[in-house]
Length: 343
Ligand code: SAH
Image (cartoon, protein in one colour):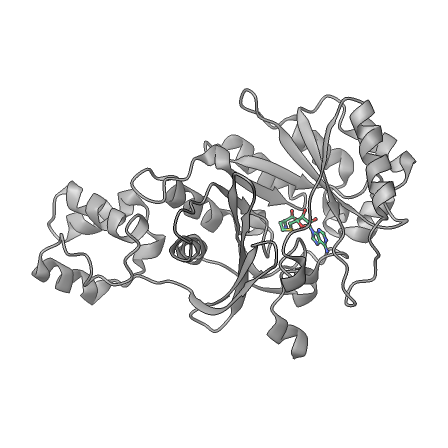
């Protein structure tokens, strides 16, 4: 049994099985999630005999740190090694007043978006809740003095809704106030447009923010860029977004990767305004991070800004995402283990 993936309730149940009172379960949960110990032996508030019993049936897993790179802008990319030697990447992104952890939910990704390097890896496997939680705990261990994680985005490798049960469990563990205590409103889950997932999140009580990667304004173009659109085309996707119950003062985010001559025309901007009409949202224009492995080119800056102006003049909130960690291939869409590239 892996204690890293246990909810507080399950930790209590485990301790109950060992004949212990409920508060022992809470202590166990705190040792793993808040104090971040990696051995049962280190849980010194538990009696030695209890620790021995526990150690006989459970371990505390943590991904291994295979490589840590630091970009000129302070962004740090972590190459993590999982128990079966699969590798994933996680990123720490410092901003003026924020420190955002960008974490992966799958090894590789089956969705094969044309502009995304992780898509080139193909599908490998889902991460377990323990591995997703482990990413966050490992990043927290790596923080420098005075640093505190402020935000968590599920925007690394993978499509969170293709692994929703484990993602949901990980979020519940990370939000527990006895654990990492991350507020749900500081967590953003980003999807390529998996409609059943959006509906499931809408029906849940998780309380995290939802971002939808749109990146096209016609089915014709979106089919080309994001094959998932053939399954859930724009009308269906936007209907699910319209039906999404937003808490007060919260907005959906629509991400839009800007590709030269593909989806960045003034007509695209006008169509985007029409598509998003009536949805409480903000748009985030993402400069495309190009690499030789991908066919597209980034839109020129003037075109991104012209696009932004059209949205802005129509009353939409439109930001341009600043590309971070580019020099270490840690920017959006660039998470893909180098070892793989060499293979
Ligand atoms: N599967 C989820 C989360 C991972 S991708 C999703 O699609 O949203 C996170 C974000 O990075 C998405 O908005 C995606 O469109 C964007 N992205 C992917 N490749 C990119 C690239 N090469 N340049 C810029 N952004 C990219």
